[in-house]
Amino acid sequence: MHLLLRTLLLLFTSSRRPPLSIWGSSSLQLRVLPTDIDIAMHVNNGMYFSLMDLGRFDLMARSGTWKKMRRRGWSPVAAGETIAFRKSLQLWQQYTIETRIIGLDTKAIYFEQRMVADGEIYARAHIATRLVSKGKPVSQDEIFREFGEPPAGLELPEWIHEWRETNALPGSRREAPHVWH
Image (cartoon, rainbow, N blue to C red; front, side, top):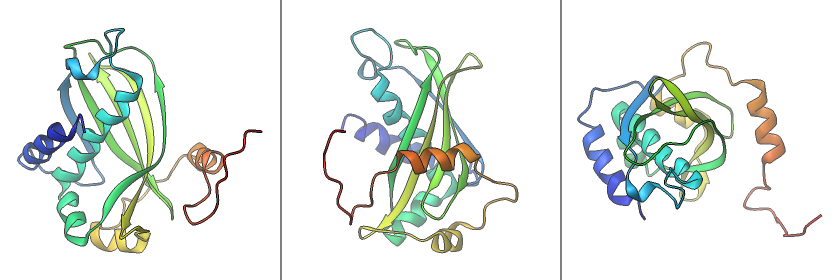
């Protein structure tokens, strides 16, 4: 909820920025706001993923993908995320969120996102997302029909497959009992 107004404003302003291909990259310039920080006066570790949502929405809005998804009743959901931190973003610091799709498989669309300030990477995340419609996944064939084929050579790094396999929970239609081992 804390980023709802910021997201709505971003969707409005992004649609007026230069268009992009969904297979291109987005660069969204922001500034660290008081609502982004924790008691240590830097961006809270959990806030990075929320801010990165803005970068993905910028790419979707500027490529026209967001309108197509809404028209079809598709919603994006995160299926897995991993992040590494290098430096802390401080209150009022300017930075950019760099966003691009690095590949797809039959279950997810994979984004790489970076928080960059002064030409340096402060944090990098990889996000596996799914598109869902009425609670069911949208197929890769449907995605390609709507958005076009990905560029030649767009291939996921092997470690992404290993990460998804070792980190995955059972599907929502299967049981996932809570038992500590």
